[in-house]
Image (tube, rainbow, N blue to C red; front, side):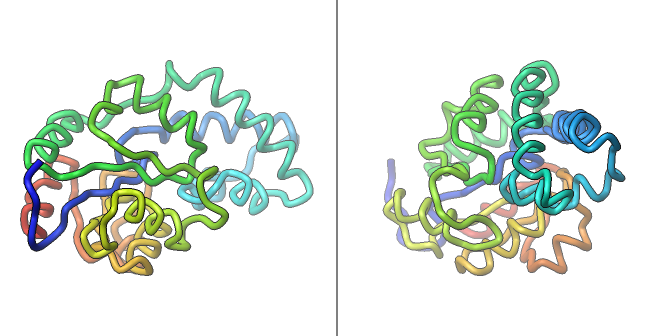
Length: 219
């Protein structure tokens, strides 16, 4: 692998809503868990508003008194339907292959637990592109705190400024800015352009196919 002397050397990716299309999977699991545990299903925007932070924190936002049970039921249901409901975004494989061909190092930094995140990548064969995966069980604090992103840079042996972060949630943008990494908004994901810009996005791509052009400008 060639050595870069300026610009970025690595691209870090969020997982859900960025590399993998898990919107319907997540929403279905939220509906099943809240319906079973709470006896009612909250509005969709309430359930999906905090996707991008660890699951327990999301459930505590919905019902602090039932957070543990909600997580347990959600995870069991999510695992059951995971492989049949998970999707990939068109062009993802081609984009990852193109970035790899430029000798960029690729990693995943997600608020999902490591094992299930790895499973999602394996379903589509995307795991072959990523040399590192940081999950929620790898750090004590989580996005929007920059610790997971900084840990990824450390394990790659790179300064944070040598890594760009691509994500679809405001928590991703906040974490990237706090880590002093270029913050690239994945507008093909689960949050609106305005939410991502308000959270500090410095670059934005409407589709994953637009990502290489942005990355090339950072090299």
